[in-house]
Image (tube, rainbow, N blue to C red):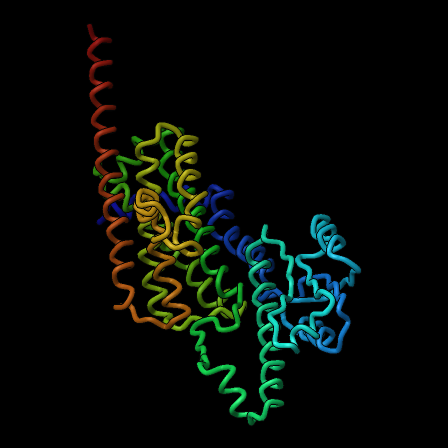
Length: 395
């Protein structure tokens, strides 16, 4: 225990003597988190510019255009005379979609014919494209239902009978968790976790690799009593405590500031602690096998850069190739984010995310043990080389 505390005190002195590391851990996560949050400050996508070409110009087509303009995601910014203009505006990037209503549209609909409400959408951006298509389908369904019900009423059906005939099966939708489709609530926690993992991995590898670069490993071993585990624990302890404070500030300050729910605070705190341990152990392992600080940082980049995409936060792990999802499960961000959203958004209990918490602890323990073994082997090799060198010099 004394060796761990002695190493921890030494590491704290080294940390606070390096202003770049202090800024990286204590300030940069907040600066970058605020920057990312500002991108999604609108929370939902509203009023994407579209063009409308209404060649029918009937009362029904004008009603359809009014309905389109009243939706959350559509803003009718341009009126065109033909479809070619819509396609040209799309290519120039002036609109995200276009609606074409052909001549005779209303008359054909009143004759009980199926008529199209033709939509041209920028499918290159799936988020915007899907939202525009969803609103167009809603408007088309509303207009179609109204016309059909009026037709049935004219044939002698009551209003209730007409509605029952047209829609024999209704739907009741209960959109649980983030009902408004708030992008801030959806993306910010995951992005913040990815940023923090990158920062903590970088600090972990620098903490160990800098000792190799500066030739101060003998002093580090002496402070730890020449034992690998106290050396690693002593180096990790200060950063674990400081980063835990940072993540708790995220939970109790940034989450409320941006309207992100925290339904199980104790569970998030437990997940934060397990996440920090796993990330620090991963960083120490990378640094233990890399010969230089530059190589260590390359390893961090290889893991950290794709971590958010691989985490399953925005694309399900089940849809990835098996070898990719297996690799993703070796990155601490994957189980952390899998636990974070249920704890923060759904209000799940710690027991309900216990698999993810044990996953994090298992990763942390495995990487910690491997790092300790690597350090021990490297030290033995170094000692053997020194003895051989001394023997040669004596001879």
